[in-house]
Image 1 (cartoon, helix red, strand yellow):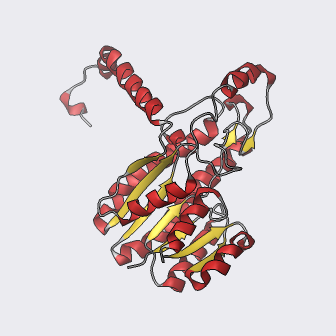
Image 2 (cartoon, one colour):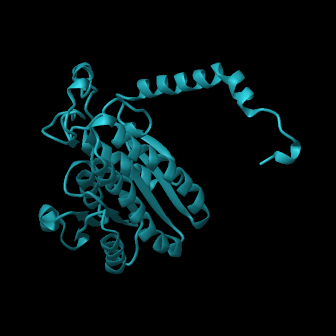
Image 3 (cartoon, rainbow, N blue to C red):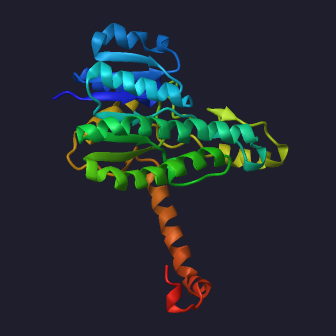
Length: 284
């Protein structure tokens, strides 16, 4: 049976590839973007199978209205893909309050509004699959990406909690963690050259030069292949809570987790010391 999708950030990049893959196999899609003009080609190619919706994920009321319209238009919602987002680049000291608030409003709060809008419909159906686009940046962190990492790490925790909350309703949650994909000009995007960049403080110029030596050098993934992989996930009877898309970051992630475990183990004596000794009545 064909599925009905609701996909944010459908105008380009991975989101556009997800929409095209779903439509290409006969599914129906409510595709959202800031302007529907970017979706005209989809409508021309797929007709009534695609519902174009102009929506900014930071507008809570618009999100709820769009999800409601999609449900009423297609009769059900099966797959919700939280894809909209961007990367704010800059050292923590370089970020303005507005930089950080805008990053979280889009990447974190925007995803929350979509989840909250869709959940009543999925719960009523007793089925549905929430897909959250995170990133390898939601698992590891690098200098100059603090705002972006903060948003993606928050999404990781949010969706892990969500998975436990909605499992009894027959709703599944998967966090997709892509590495670099060739979504612009056929090249693996350089995180220091894309997204929003804070005004540079010369004190960090040396760090920027060092990072420029290896950022954006991971092998670029094929967005069309990622879309086909997502189809397999939404068709799975037992999808993963987390899944990496792409190969370049896996060895790095392995090392990061190894290092974290070793650090915790090396400091276990201090951890026990910090616990102290209290009366049994103090148990929590």
